[in-house]
Structure formats: C-alpha cells, structure tokens
Length: 244
Image (tube, rainbow, N blue to C red; front, side, top):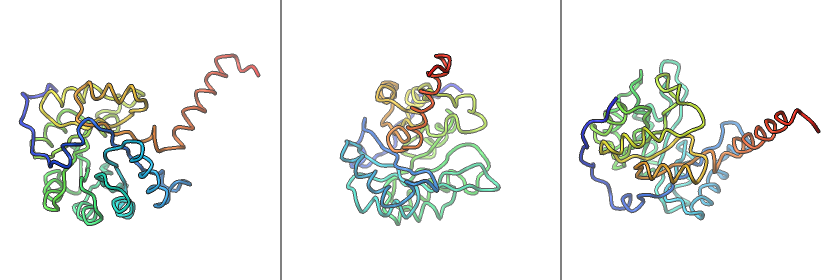
C-alpha cells in the first residue's frame, strides 16, 4: 500500500533519542544450541557494547534480567513463544510485557502484524506504556507499521518482513529496504531489522531513512555465520566441477 502523508513523530525519551543512527545488536542464541546459556548471552551482549552497540535486543526474561544488570545501554526485551492457535511468536501476551519490564527492559518489542493473536496490538502497546517502557512494534508490511504508529508505538521495526504468509515472497537474501524507506517517508521512526548481514547493508538502511539498525545473526549467531561460509565453499567446489 502507499504510505499516508507524514505523521508527527511520537515523543521519545532523551535517553533513547541520543541512540539515533546507532547499531542495535540482537544477542539471541538458538534454542538448545551450545550457545544457549544465559552467561554466554551476557558475554555476547558485553562484547557487542564494547564494539559500539548502542542497545541490545535480548530474548527471554531471565536473559533480559541478566543482561540489563551487566550493561549500561538500553535493552530491548522480547519473549518468543510457539503457540498452537496463533502464528504470532514475539511477545504475544500482556504478561510477557509485564515480566520483561520487571526484568529491566527499557524497550519492549512485540509482533504488531495483522494476524490472529492472543492479545491485540493496542493491549500490548498499553501494557508497555503502563510499565513505563518504550513500545517497539515488529512489523511485516506498510499497513502493520502505519497502524502501530497511529496507536502510539515509538519505534517501528521491519523485523517480520519476509516472515509472514503475506510477505513470504520477500524472504530472500536482501533486506527490505523498500519497507524501511516507505515507512520513514510516512513519518514513522523505523528500526531496520531482518537479513542485514554486512556493514554496507546496515549503512544502506540508514540511507533509506532508518532511525537505527538492528543486526543479529551476522554478529552473534555462530551457527548461521558458519553455514554461510560452508555453503559458499560447497557452491564454489561444485562450480569447479567437484575437482579436488
């Protein structure tokens, strides 16, 4: 859909305003992996801050609590759940919001897509603000982002572009720079996220109008990074005719 005329920016706390144009690092381990330990998540978070991250995206209440106590930058808290009656995975319940806030998250992100869900986007946004936190709406489309912005979410993430049925055709290698640009032009404060794997892509996201940029797998998912290199070598070997 075409973006509506630019809407006014919602108020932003000074502590977050100074993070504009910065890098958010998502420190999330694969469930059940060798890295799936709170002490490792904390170490990744501390290393990311040492490297210049202005905020961290952390999954799980226990991890949020531990990381928030170990760093001075803001923590974006989420809870991931696999529900039988809804495709929504990211912070689906009001109780999740309350638990994340109590654990020390200053920003709470939640799925804001137009899908069957246990709690409405409005209810989640209200719970985030009631807890004194900043609301980040993880979106997949222009409509998602504009609706969440109209509800008063301070940050609009492009997190779910390519990860919903409606946007599955965008699930390739490239980030959705078009969504970043359209939402930014419409007046939203956009955090670019999803399939950003290189510094050049992160810079392109800023040039597309992003307020900030989140990078996860390319920095903290050892399994994914290793797969990328391994597959590239396998392809090169195959292209060479499989010769030793």
